[in-house]
Length: 182
Image 1 (cartoon, one colour):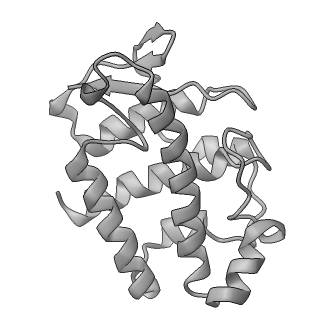
Image 2: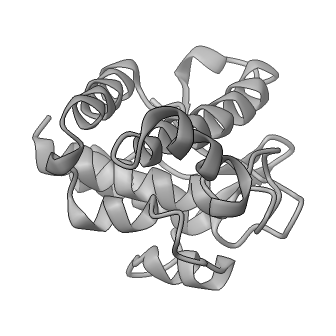
Image 3: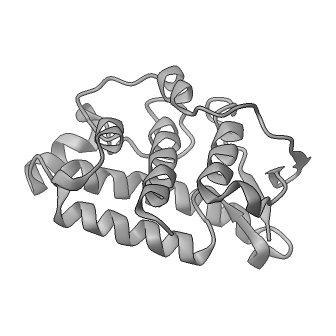
């Protein structure tokens, strides 16, 4: 997988992960990326350069835990993948990329840096507007969430963007997972 594809997926994940913090949509019980939340503590602990990356890892982990809990309740869960629980090779590539940013924070793309900037007072609408998708993908609703059809032709970054475009329509305090099967 190309670095640019990994960065696109990471950017999409971080938008939804930041949007899901309790200060905004309250999908997971974190406020680690907000300056008045955990970001100030991380800054004092790790320094200006590493703290935003650590906050990013924290919110991604919170979102991962939420989705993995939902997936664990599903039948045929081994074939289910989502924005924060993608296929193993994608998950591993994202982990490696975040470790790279921890070692070399200056190499982080500007759009990802902006998402993780604790000084920016984001709103959920601003985060939602960053998810640029052509249209809301068709999905099948189930008691587990919104299932979209797996389409290898569009590529992994676009597939993840489709999942995110469905997630951004969720209500405050009510997380509905978007997923696909392969």
